[in-house]
Amino acid sequence: MRIDIITVLPELLESPLGHSIVGRAIKKGIADIRVHNLRKYGKGPRLQVDDYSYGGDAGMVLMVEPVYRMIGELKSERDYDEVIYLSPDGEILTQGIANELSLKENIILLCGHYKGIDHRIREHLITREISVGDYVLSGGEIPAAILTDAIVRLLPGALTDETSALSDCFQDGMLSAPIYTRPAEFNGWKVPDVLLSGNPKLIREWQDEQAMERTKRLRPGLLEE
Image (tube, rainbow, N blue to C red; front, side, top):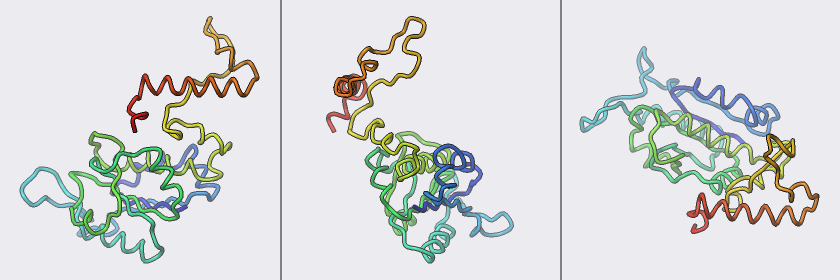
């Protein structure tokens, strides 16, 4: 899978994309992630890619031309399944969306910055808008890293145990059951006996019950959905 990320601050993506599961997936050739500096198509000695907004609102806006040229360059090399803008008013990222996108072959992620992007980009170049929550960040780089991580960990071979992702929170529409590891007792705090029983059927029943209870208590909206 290939993911191309367009940004004005590529250095913000170096660490999250270079380590842990995403970093290992890149080294294995499972994921091909390219970060592109939008200033390649900037104007003047400052490589300007932003300007004041019409209407007099405060804040700078990414201009349409450099984005158009960057996306055009990428599209001249391959076909893309999605051109995604990371936006606070996009659809909220869910595990289902991550699952869906992990089946794609080529994706472009556009990171907004400053006040946002010229709306003509959204009207004519973007195929999908995704938000990581109902709040505003300084730019789309952190959301792009989040979305990339959520997608890449689902790719075959990215995880040491590929079945691990199947038991993650939200995969079946609920929260996960509590998890424990050694020692079986610490400071008087004990691991539930059923998990030490060695009985897969009883353990699975306990996990299902716990997942349902935690979801009802902590995230009842998931069950409604």
